[in-house]
Amino acid sequence: MSNPNSLLRERAVYVVGIGLHPYGFPSDTPYVQLGLHAVREALADAGLQWPQVRSAVVGTAALGMAAGRVMLRHLGSTGLEVMQVENASASGSTAFRIACLQVASGEHDVVLAMGVDKFGDGRRAVLKDGLTPLSPTSNVPLVKFALLARRCMREYGLTRQDMARVAVKNHGNASRNPFAQFRKPRTMEQVLASAPVAGDLTAMQCCPRGEGAAAVIVVSEEALKRLGLPRERAVRVLASTASSEMLPTDDAPALVDLVRKSSAAALAQAGIGARDLDIVELHDAFTIEELLYTEAVGVCETGEGAAYVARGDADIGGRCAINPSGGLIGMGHPLGPTGIGQVAEITRQLRGEAEGRQHPDARLALAHMIGLGSVAVAHVLARA
Amino acid sequence: MNHATLELARCTVCGGTSFPAQVPGCRHCGAPAAQLRAEACAAPVHLLNFVTVHAPLAPGLKVPAVIGEVALAPGLVEEARIDVADESTLELGMALTPVWQPGAEDTAGSWAFRPMQAEVAA
Image (cartoon, rainbow over all chains, first blue to last red; front, side, top):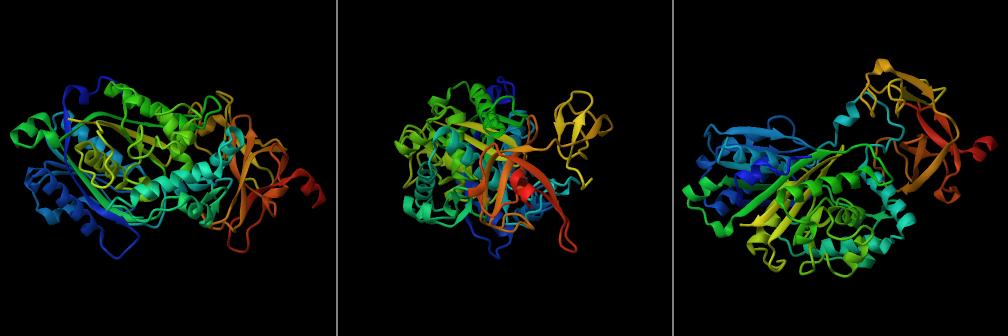
């Protein structure tokens, strides 16, 4: 885990620009157009010109080699540093982390972090490791989480309705998000009646396949002043941590333990507690994840996740809004952009600019992402 | 892979187990393959959890399929295909035995697990 006394505590890093291409179902639109749309929007939002950006970190999981420069050359060949990052579902979050650390280290003072993806062929390195798994589903996250959901139902009394309620909330939030892949509110009956996929999970409790792009621009304190950027629209990055799964040491699922430890490390680095958070964007690829991770982050007690959602505490306007963007289930999960999209949503919320879905008086937020393997990347952001 | 016997890897350094037997290192202590030895999985194994998969989520997976979690050794839990018509015949903790199922023509075979009584009947 990361040192609580991180570079981000010593040298302030701010998000000053955000941009998105709406997430959508697979289309014929080239990734370059998706990505450039998001970057141009982020530049305009920040009030910056492309030559002022000194480094670009591009998160993508499915595009293949050298996606960054091929896309960014259409903005002008300024000679900036360009790097491509792949870290499964956490590719965008990892790109954001590297961008923040580049600024905090003093290497660059204006850095773009972006994610872009098209739905690919689904090939994963784990399928090339030369080992034959016992089950053809061994590397299929959906089956892993269906099994985990069944275990939670049996051991903790979780119900199908408890899980479906997460989908109802997140589809509802997404219906108010113009960048979301799904834009229709759904009822409990619709969620439960949608096609069965695995175990007790139905189609509307699972994130969709899709594409899109998201971009954010981070700057140093010095750049904020030198470039005359408005401090009231800047969002400070208080913490950045990254880690990976360990073998379970007790009965807790290893992935839940990873979320618990990684979010605790990020909160410690930020110097705040979980109950201080106003907003959490987290990896709800499947409904069971949101319930378990809300508890693991510490927003509520272990075993209270379902009641937390049922009471409306996880709603926009509740105690801590969980996935106000609609999350992966509602907003979508195009892989590379997802983690950057979380940061963009949080920035919009902390600025008070989330029209139609604004969580009142939001000051502190956590962006937490999981990637296949499993890896975890967490960031804490605060109104500047 | 020895298809006559389902094997796992036992680490001679730390005693931990990994699957499959051909892993390039111990998942517990990182000992290299030279310090791992193949060991037959002790049958029966016990069923820890199961669900029915309704969507074709993996190549070669015919649905509906019952996928379970089985303990191949203490602390070594793996997903496995359970060879039953539907999950209503299963009970947690029931004894299972691994069965090698040859693939059709050009496709590879795979392991599945059957309830012990069904295996006897078959």
